[in-house]
Image 1 (tube, rainbow, N blue to C red):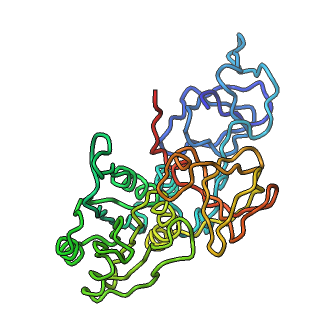
Image 2 (cartoon, one colour):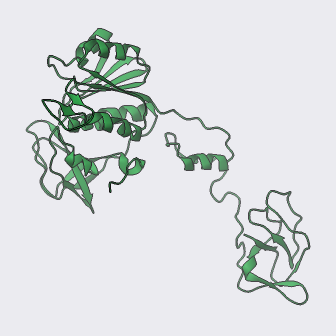
Image 3 (tube, helix red, strand yellow):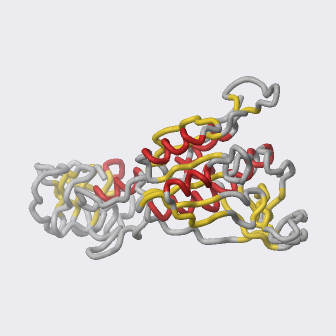
Length: 345
């Protein structure tokens, strides 16, 4: 603090020279001596406290007096206060935030070893998708094109490209064969319909299917494949809420692993209302958090985003459902801590 470095009890005789930040180590003080000091300066050896400027006054003999009690060590920042030599400042896998960069610099590091964000490419499939205006004549709005890039960024990816391929098998093959992204995310085309080209294209490329469908609703036709040693494809269903299921259960673990981040600790909350279950599959149901309970939301069908748009998390509902008051595992949504949101007016 700006003031005087003092030694022993007052009053003190004040040296003529002062101590400034960034200068050489000052000479030691003797008992009954003080010296002007600036914020951030090195404290002279044998200093017992720093008296703030607003708390000191001089007398007619030029001596310095304190207007209040001055505890030993007052306003002296000791060495090793935040960490000691050999301490681990942060665990491996910590996200490099601005504060992490500042901590590294303060601790004397010139460089840090970091895993870069995985590069992701989004391929939007389907001839029926519109990019503007109202749905009409069997055409529907593309909800995934606007939603996926910011969601993937919130999950830790660097989205390099968003491409619309329609239902063109050759275009899909070419896009996958020449992609340089570490993660490719496709939308739709994962089932076995006449224009579902994802499975045939993966077979044509010799890809390894790691996950080929899951027992979860919505989202059961999602898939995960390895195209090359360091390249994966996440195939999301075309229905929007089903695609969200795939994002949180396939894309998120994949991106987290590629970025060397630790898995979040699972947690549960009791449901305020009952959540209906599928007869034999797990359901993922949007919920809002209200105190120590989670409240299931309506509009949770595979094609619906109205519930998800208001949700804080997804509740994992086992086959048969969960009664009101019972605990449910929750999957957090990334935007609550990512800062990607804006407010409507």
